[in-house]
Picture 1 (tube, rainbow, N blue to C red):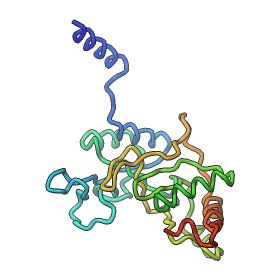
Picture 2 (picture 1 turned 180 degrees about the vertical axis):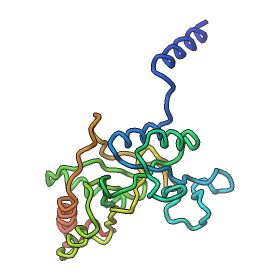
Picture 3 (picture 1 turned 90 degrees about the vertical axis):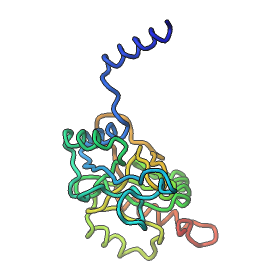
Picture 4 (picture 1 turned 120 degrees about the horizontal axis):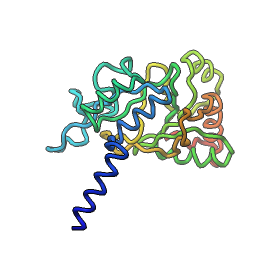
Length: 227
């Protein structure tokens, strides 16, 4: 009897709230509300025979297994809700891939261990951070959009930049939570602030300056972020 009542209660809640959307679709629709264009990632190969952590793309040596666009590349990324629902209805567990640049966020990434060190140092320095995406291998600090020309000028005047940094700008992409790729689960190390408005993002120059300073503050005079 309790089981029947429980089922009826869950059915009433389902009818009241509507069907529960897959987490990836919900994340994609949230990105669309923020005007962040996204596209499904290729995902991992089917489990079995040790292939569970390999990419589903044809390249057996894929350098970013499961963490790149599924079909036509980042140019197909969109904020159109109908397209997003169609994509993730057909592939509900597909990773959510953000097309960086343009009016969308860009990012500065570094190895996961260096990322943890960097965030601790940036917090100590009082640097305001935006959302931070973490994977088992790399952490990515989201920044405001920038052009490749501006990034080049910014790096040109620096005497030293940690070699571990990567820049995800115009024409690039970044996998967002709650995706799962060949390297593991993607999560928010620093979550976007709740609300309908798009998250605040720091300027890339501010972030690079802070990361360079955090790197050169190593006690031995070396770089904390060079691994």
